[in-house]
Image (cartoon, rainbow, N blue to C red; front, side, top):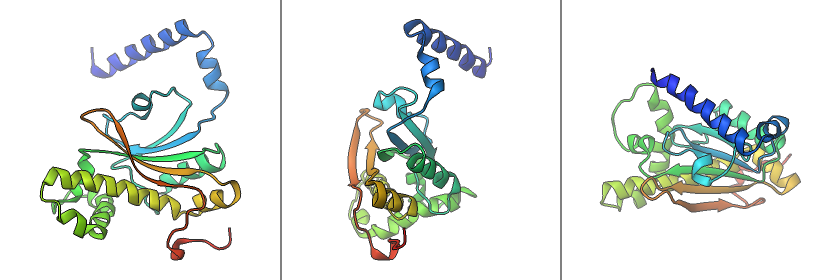
Length: 210
């Protein structure tokens, strides 16, 4: 049996188990989607949003990319954000990184990773902004873990810089923005940053005609 065939078998077993527990399970999911949360997480296969938060399908709208980035030119991310905020009316947007993130660690090196360089440069910018703090940490693993936290903080700030978030804050007083970091070693999520609706940022990023 090929590995992908095992996935299909497991899917059938999972679907059958759900129906045996609740005959109407999939009918409810098919009818409506009203998640309260948008999750922006890392593509790392060890950080599945539903499993680590104990939530069911339909409860979290998910977007994942390398190192949980919010890049202002990323139309994929911005489309997800706009849909979640303006159509699904989510109340919370969570940026969740994780300790031991390969993307963050790669950004601390001077290696050439080809096309990935363009993505990692956004993390290198975070390093540059917080260079003094990071280079005061002598232990490399602790320095990378701190960069993971600071990267999450900066991505939450990037959310607040968008007209999508600022307009929702002005008219609907939502969503709250949360920065979390997941521990691969203990499975615990650590909140590291938060921005409530209406929080002011540097005026150069604030729109005055929303």
